[in-house]
Image 1 (cartoon, rainbow, N blue to C red):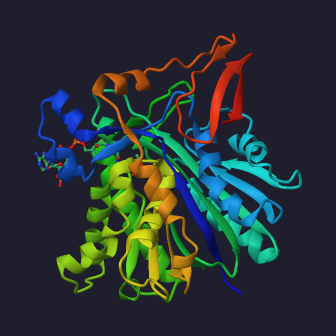
Image 2 (cartoon, rainbow, N blue to C red; image 1 turned 180 degrees about the vertical axis):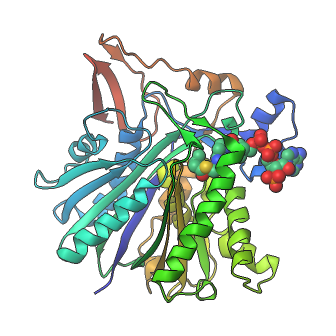
Length: 388
Ligand code: CAA
């Protein structure tokens, strides 16, 4: 019996800022963003969107297809949790109408925790193959204005159904891990925006890749040249390109630069125009590969490098299942991305500084998202979510 990803669907906000606009205001060349970091647009969450509403929107298409009865657990991965105690997934459980027998928990370790959730889900399914586990990763990447991280913001959520004999990607049990206590990116409880030591974070990312890969090689018989494609954590798309060149060099793979680039380029289409979505980013990259690659991926090995600052990382492998192309949500994803609305720099500033009421009074939040679920009010310190 194989275990892996049976369904995958993602969501992002209907607003985006073109990085050309940001470059213009900053009086720098837009090529720094378009080419230097490989990002074109970044999604900006609407005032009535948060990780809960984005998660429910991402999962809706999965639920429409498979129903709720088969789902025994919901594992919710996020860096942008909305409560120190209550799992954001519990709100999503209600919004999606999941069964009251379905367990819910939230997982945190920066951008890595969706991978922990996937591995835990695979273990649960291996134990009870008739059950399916819904894994949702949802994040809003926010840095202070005027910092080096500003151009690498974004938001998005991805929902994946983990099952026995999956229809999309079979996940191998062998993994390589690397954990190290470092301060490259973090967000104390009292801050809405992340703190980052940008250049250091890119170095630690590459070091972690090497270490996790070495650990993977010890555990698995799958060699570098057995892989056709690689999905990386995507803080910005140029990071994945750099990382993959680094891994190819470590392995003395004997590939041309073009061949190396081809192994990642189809994973980058969506993230280039969504931006960083922390926990969700690598799996939106997987969606991009499955939905945009012109070649038939059936039977192809895919390598995954998941990185969460602080830091925990993991390299693992999977195989695309024959018939995967019949089980995607490509049209919905493309329509959602094409119908987004560009914001001006002033509108972007407004979205960044939308009030985050903490006084316990009743605050209605004007309707603005194009999604099905929205945060309608915060009242008595309680978040009130509604279906539109
Ligand atoms: N045309 C083409 N390229 C240009 C250019 C131009 N006009 N101007 C600059 N560039 C190139 C630079 O040469 C550079 O390329 P190299 O990396 O190949 O040298 C690239 O654009 C970026 O330029 P800078 O290094 O000057 O950019 P910066 O200092 O302003 O910031 C950054 C880059 C540090 C990554 C910053 O975006 C940042 O802090 N981001 C947030 C942190 C982050 O994403 N870290 C990634 C690893 S941590 C992680 O993965 C977890 C997570 O999700 C946060």
